[in-house]
Image (cartoon, rainbow, N blue to C red):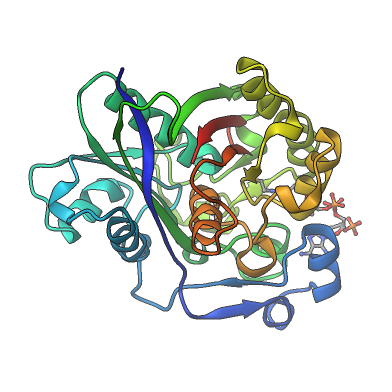
Length: 332
Ligand code: COA
């Protein structure tokens, strides 16, 4: 039986640290407000000229090295991002170019905070069906280019950070060993406008104009309370769906890696599932919300720190814009 597993992990964040105090110098906010409501102390922003693809290249190289792959071993690339370098083409082809892999297929997934989990499920399906044996899955964001760094942007600008995470996924035939077990993907488009960047977009004509800069629609919009309300329900729901599918209970999971949306959301989910805090991993204090990159960054950090070890039962879970929510259960 063909299955797939994560063979290697990597992550990369830019060196430039931006603290809550730095933000308070350019907008009406404070370290106390941000820390209390989100758990974030600092995030990383790229320097001018550094793109999301550049971050992805570094994360990918680390993942390749951990997996013991050469770049030429990659047969397909899946790139999750909501902050692509260009409107089109997607970042997948740019990463493919940087890795020197002409001809290798590359696909972008535009699923925001759940982009990495959706991408992993696609990689697993391609491998199970025999289409590929080795796929590189990346989540990377350069939020700092699109945030509004003044009082009008303060409700979203304080949340997001830049970074990239990557995993190498390869084929395995061991039904008891390291493997991706199941994926659970959901969406509810009735909430599409509750967390979005509307412009530029072909829903309006012209799709880009000076008005869109003035009306704020080219920056993120978020109905924070609606996001919070849905997230604290959907996260536990989808994690339980993954566990129920295998006849498991929360105490049998070794590690939960939630998308790093907000520490208060993570704490509420931890409590609802009755999990000990140390089983639910978090790095939001240092990196903020890095959207599609957040889960692979946490995973890569945890692998390097031995917090996640081979054989551990790990549940990845995400919620975000769309709304979309998703989980992957795996034996790492
Ligand atoms: N600094 C200081 N004050 C701020 C602020 C900031 N960065 N952003 C908003 N405020 C103000 C608001 O203007 C409002 O002021 P008012 O009472 O004078 O109108 C006040 O703080 C409270 O705003 P509100 O939006 O009601 O706060 P909240 O308690 O709902 O917390 C969030 C806001 C964003 C932290 C919270 O809604 C949340 O965590 N939502 C989920 C967000 C998330 O996880 N997004 C990622 C999705 S993947």
